[in-house]
Length: 133
Image (cartoon, rainbow, N blue to C red; front, side, top):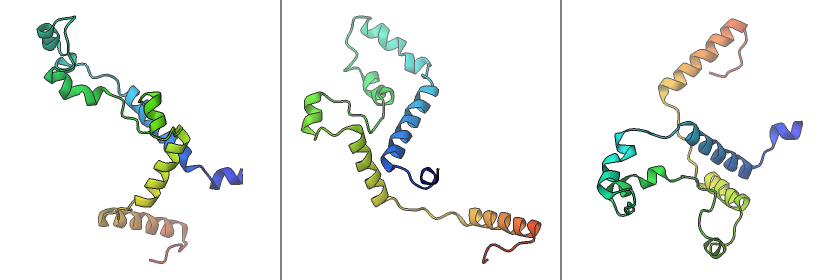
């Protein structure tokens, strides 16, 4: 129990984040409106027509494609040429990249002030002094 509470796998955290993002994408649903349905495009191109080169397709294809970073979507040959890294290897690389490049953004003064007032209020309520400020 102690080890589970203080240790974890950074690669697993990256993978879990990817899974949560994909679930959120599914739960958010599919946009259904006039533009997304593209009825005018279907009518102009025809049911058996070619949509790939149509401006509407070009405008929207990136929105419709899955945006995962960890799962390799290419061919086996491309995967092997890219080093044949499995999901865990890619997740560790991503975790190391995050650890090496992440910059902590300081909290705004408003947030710091609000947090300080909460701590001060709790110290007064419980008659304790746990902070140095």
